[in-house]
Image (cartoon, rainbow, N blue to C red; front, top):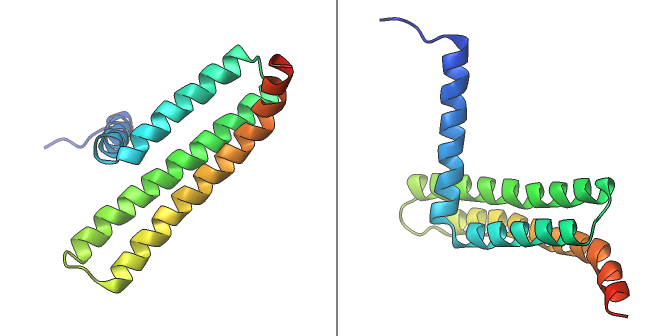
Length: 125
């Protein structure tokens, strides 16, 4: 039996990570909402010609929401495995993780408002 090379292990690692992203999108309805929102933000940023720095801030906000959603999903799966029956502490853990996603999404919305509202106001005035 031959061992995998360094590059084969990295390739496998990326393949597993990509599978994880597909699981998030396939199993989490809010992730699909985040996907549509991220596409809408990218389109608006392109159409409104935001600066490079604003692009970076928007991309970081989008990434924060996605990372939060990924951690929330992983925690939900782990809690469901560890505690298949309802347990109040398991519920608190899941609620706290979902709260992190909500906080990230609210922050992303505020960032979007700061960047887009002045441009939209100028466009429609």
